[in-house]
Length: 254
Image (cartoon, rainbow, N blue to C red; front, side, top):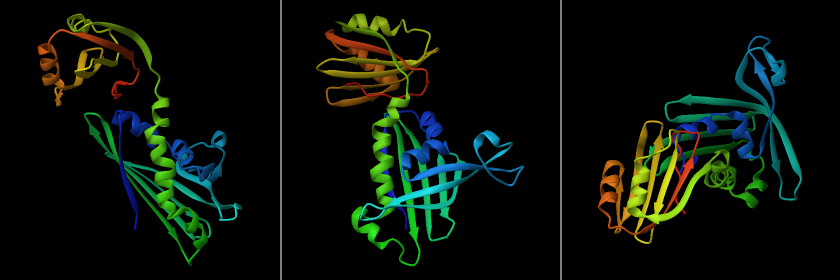
């Protein structure tokens, strides 16, 4: 039975899909799996990536575990993936002695505030193998999800994104609204904040593509958010604009 967790991150689905469908990123995130060689469809064997003519999504891999005394144990196996379906990515590992299997999947769902990710992981041990390991770490599938995947998604993933601040000023709200009509021809994020309101807008070369406004304990989205923002009484606000090269990025204002 697989262990499942759900997390929402303030980043667009397309970008997350790019990261989680890269087997080298995923094996690094997991921390316990190393990809040694790639399977070559032409040569019908595993080779270093530089020597592969036609790569398959199968890898000669090493699964690295540590027992309760701190001894590191390595098992050779095969890592397969990604298998990519709409909004769904899965991976599979099996050791050569067939005593351990790991099944991992991600389900992605676009949200206004980013992307919701459902994570499923199943760690299968045969013949009571490595029972002592669970005494230290609980179920290993839970350890992979809570100890490795979720911390990466909640913090490290945002570091993959290159942002450039192009505007940062404190000004009157009516001046900030004028700025909204003069967006640069690029993609990015606009943030307008005061004691009473919190506005985040997303734009590309064609103009605004989405927005969110928190005002008077209410939440407004997209066209309604812009309409309500223009109704707000004039006050001092802080306005920050970031240029973001990935068009569907989602950020929170702080």
